[in-house]
Length: 287
Image 1: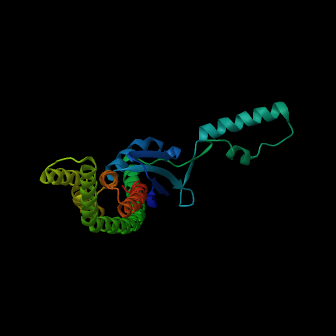
Image 2 (image 1 turned 45 degrees about the vertical axis):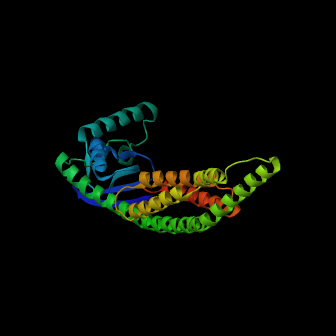
Image 3 (image 1 turned 180 degrees about the vertical axis):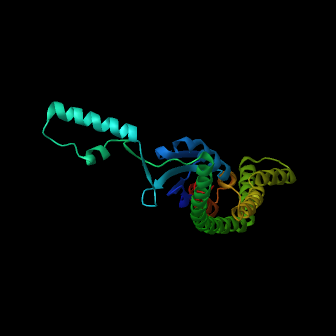
């Protein structure tokens, strides 16, 4: 799931702005970018973020708002040295030209942002703004999660209904298979004038029918459905467990398809496999 959030906090005469963007990822991957005044606090930001997050690729950006009352400090010694160097260059190249102060202001680091913030104040501001940003991103993720949950449960109901249609067909299909086998065996015995105990034939036919029966697979599928519903309604990270359950559903329905030669059941199996595959694609977006 994806999310975006912004947090603010005062820091000195400036305002700290933290932006958090999260996208889907199998593991937790935190990446932090910071302005040069806060570059020393990148590790603190990453550690704090990891305490709040479990999964996903999260990009966090820290900057200060120049319009939020940020002051400036002039390095007088450096500014004077730069100005004198500019004047010396002017004397050599263009002695009649002036050296405007605006040129001095355009030199990097001659006019620098006031970053005289102690470490504790920085960390307090970072903590406040970062938690705001992560909470806002998490709220967006939860909204998306609610939509995904409803979609997955709707699809699960479709799978369950098609599975129930297979269950309704199972008894009728078992009877058809039994009668078909008995007819073929009896025809074979008659054609070859064989003397075989009818009870023995019936016993073997029953064994074959039982091996092709799909009742156990259907019971396990219903168990997976119930587990999926329970997990989908929790607030815990369940994406991997949901994906595992869908894999098991796919395995069971494949077994149903391989055991059955009935056209109605085969059509339902195809529909269920397609729906499960769509659900697996959606589950990749679930934390």
